[in-house]
Image (cartoon, rainbow, N blue to C red; front, side):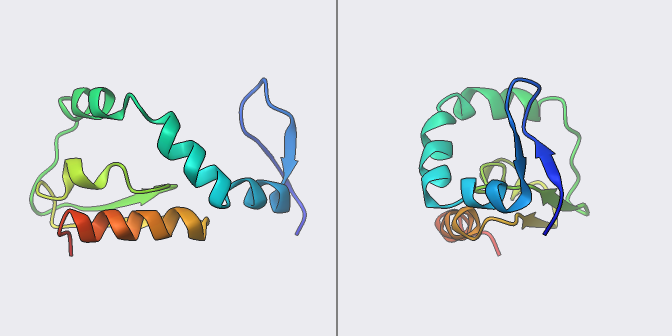
Length: 101
């Protein structure tokens, strides 16, 4: 697989296979720890997002599904999409924990 992905201007370029490797189990553990501000950040962000019960939301790059608990009762359906199977596994656990369909 060819291609390059730039994570941020200060990060080195990673090939797609390298990027996928970064998003393994170690990345999931780092991501869960690094998102310590999520309980503050997401509720504040939600104040500015107008969601309706008839909306279907596709969260591309959902990671571990951190958005799910904040919107599950506000939309008809939420789809989390990510290429990292370890992240999806955590998101699936989060879905079960919060009783989302």
